[in-house]
Each structure stands twice: as C-alpha cells, then as structure tokens.
Amino acid sequence: MNPEPSLLRRVVFASALYDLVVTVPFATPWTAEAVLSNLQALHHALGAGGEPLPAFTFTHLFFVALFGTIVTLWSVVRLVQPTAFNGAIDTAGRALFSTWMAWALTQGATRVVVGFLVLELAWMFAQGGAILGSRRWRGGIPATAR
Image 1 (spheres, rainbow, N blue to C red):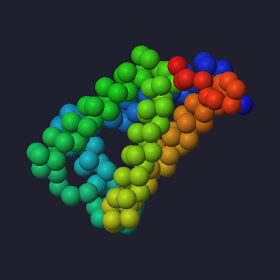
Image 2: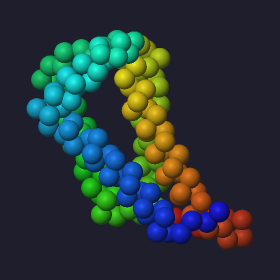
Image 3: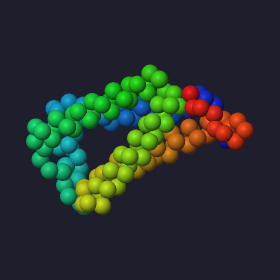
C-alpha cells in the first residue's frame, strides 16, 4: 500500500486541524478555566467515575495554558507544513500523550479522559498508518521520509 503523498499531507493536516480546535481553548488561563469547568460539569453529569477534576489554582492554569499554547503552535506548524517528517514527530507525541492518559486513568483520573484517549489513539493510528504506507522501499531499506 502506497498512498499518494497528497493523502499523507491531508491526514497530517487534518490531525493538526483537530489539535488546533481542541487546544486553542486551553491556550489562555481564562479559556482553560472555562473548559476545565465544563469538563468537571461533564464528569458530574455523566457520573463518569474516577476522580473529578479539582479546582485549578492560578499555578495550575499557568501550566495548562503553557502546554495549550505549545500544542496550538505545533498545530499551526503542521497546518502550514503537513510533511511526513512533522507527521512522524506528531505521531510519536500522540503515542506519549496516549501513554500519559492511560497512566492517569489507571491512577483514578476522571473517565472523561477516555474520550480524549480514544481520539488521540485514532489520530495516532490514522496518521502513523498513512506515514508508514507512504514510505518507499529501496533494496529493502526504507527511503527517507520527506
């Protein structure tokens, strides 16, 4: 299977667009506070199990906004340059994010995290599959991803 390079670019672009939509609300302390409050309400409304989100202090919101800003900027990089290289780095990041989400769930985090985990894994496999499928093999050695 060797998808067109344009398919790979579209998958990397789509995953970046998803990340942008999900992370922009976390990119400022004020919007992050609102999102976290809504996630807390969702936890209670669903009776989701696990530990509900705590009240976030200014220090918590600083770190949430810091990471929200970085992921937002990384999303913009992939929107502008949806390359196999950027997609491969992002796929590795999704594997790590998924690992931390799974760890949090085993430690008793709110089950609302499962929704984020499912989407993270879906994008990891979609993007990783497109990247692996687009690689060309020369003499049994994979060509460099571009």
